[in-house]
Length: 529
Ligand code: G4P
Image 1 (cartoon, rainbow, N blue to C red):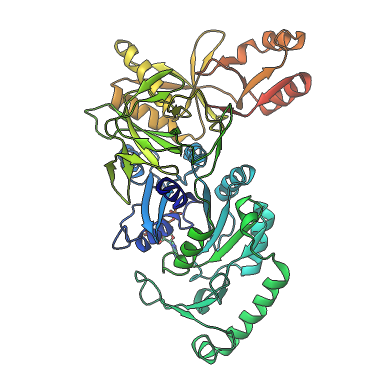
Image 2: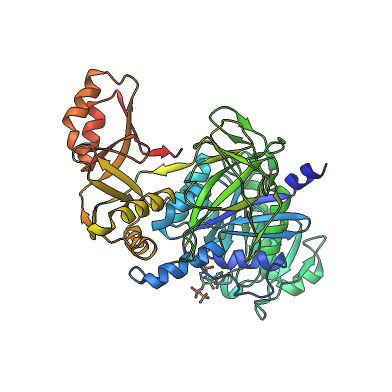
């Protein structure tokens, strides 16, 4: 059946890494293999360069790039590949976490010299908890770095993964000779002369082949054989089921910049990575091959055109076929909406499409109907779960700096919060508005965008909050709960959904509150509905 085939050939994934490990370079090389771009350098890095914090043009430029690279799709060997972009900058980590709700698997890029870094650790933890299948790519083998076994060890201990090498480097840095592929059982000889060309692969039936010795050198071959024996003795054999269940992570070595080991990664990826997966809702689990369409919004992007204040809502299709000009049910608003120009994404372009399938992302033009976490269906009353909102770490009061523009300010704040730029809390005591963000950079983004998109001016005022947490108690009439509400009155607020939030002023008071009120649950993430 055509529909089944379309589902089975899709691979929707994200690449995660600490900034500078080589995510952009790898993405670009993957596109190169897909024939989606003709030359390297076509994909712009979306990272915020150092020192760009107060360069607003830079922020705008980044936003432009991040629309273009939000979804990069291409065809490779009968497969339709959708790469979802994940910002590496830690101030935008929340965007990355949400994007991870829309991927079916991930590739983790690690710098051979730096090993496991902070951002990698955080992002992998999220994937591990959700049992997302992961492949690890150790990059920059053309540079001197850590020993391969030490790195595998580090990945296991620091990231808590269970790894199995699918390829193994022959030498490293100055002595980098090539890569042995355990998956396809061939050797790729490294030639650093031409970085932009796809390297040629030499197949060998046996490691004792004379040609191999000549190409790589006796000493390197001896070392490789020794390493492979160790690999065989120490690491589990690759098992696809274990990988798909998130219990085993295959590891590849290579150099994205030199186009080395990338095709092996891609060829293995399309074979082992999962097609679109079922997803849980508040009522039941939805299977991709159900005939009726359903999907959810995981990202909203303000349009770059200042003349039209419309936005693009990114919807991951979970089941059925999404069709243009067909009324779909917006569950939160309980109303039907029709989309005349849904966008599909290709390498660097977006185009209006008539239909899209599970695994695909469609961009829907939106004039304020959507917020992150919204569910669209053919009519069923379901709500997709698991799109988190994290406890912010930076807090400031927001004040109106232009009394004539109060309406614009309120609309602007409202829409920016729907986009997930930050979270808004209203203090119970006096109704003052507090903005909470995951990174400090967001305050500048908010101020800049309010002024340029909504002609509203705001100022921020410091507010000493250690952490915000959502609180709940099974029995809302519980005496201790009521006591807490009374004592902590000054520190209580409502989020945009009207949920109760405790703004703890220090780690100490949070800890004390947790100890003193065991009947209250303190949540550090909230599900966006
Ligand atoms: P990111 O998206 O993860 O932040 O990393 P990005 O791909 O931008 O790569 C970061 C730097 O690492 C870039 O150098 C890139 O050229 C380099 N790089 C990526 N893969 C390899 C590799 O396999 N070997 C080596 N030696 N370097 C690699 P840059 O100087 O920061 O940027 P650029 O001026 O080259 O763009």
